[in-house]
Image (cartoon, rainbow, N blue to C red):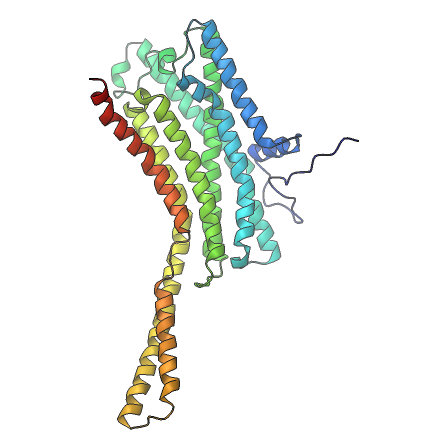
Length: 372
């Protein structure tokens, strides 16, 4: 008898209460992919290979060899869909890791889980449609202005005088049509991804500010969401560096530089924004506990002076032990970090930000020397 494949955990586990809003299209799509047999990642990889192969074959038919830039554009859609699927799934796991520090009733915890793993239908739809309309309208208007001889109205680097040349594709109807469809799909996915990050990071900030029990000597659960925000930031950085690697001439244009810097700053903000609130709470809690330890230390020293002045030296050993314990407490509190992440988490983000830039700078320095 054929063995049945184990069922996978759905992206959004069913609620026992009425949901606060209907799920978005990306949640319904992710749930559909999860119901398919096999690993969900395989379908996104397969879609990326299919789109890349289709783009490559059309470019070859149009007497132009496909290059890494238009192939990267082709796989952007499955990449962003797979990344959103992954972030929706792992966010539920982050909430479970955070649960020891969660201050919420069973109903509130279930509601928070739903809000973290499910996007509202209408805002997600409007975000996707807005990015698609603005991006496609900008390309179309700049192209038409150039055709009409009015490109001088546009800032330098914002014109699209030759759509096929800009996107490294053959000037044929199938090539332009496929690339246009891919771009529309990529813009739709980008708009949804931007809203997913905004929604999840706002929910994480809400959990930190309203539903967190802070214990400065048990910070492990507070680190759960920093790992999730790191995954979100790395997803953006991977896309940014991929674009820079395959099309530096596009990225170095004014429009490209703005897009690339937006991705980089967005990645950093994605990591830091939801963690800033709990950082302030940790600072206040640490300052309060240090103040209390200092107040007790002050009282203990005053008692020590009183006994010495009145020559009451009996049981001084107990007082010395109390003062030593307070000093140990203060030293321990001083070492308590107030940023809710592990050292390895921050190192990973810094490495992802700095290492590719350093490699590129080294290449720029070595390339003239090696070409001599």
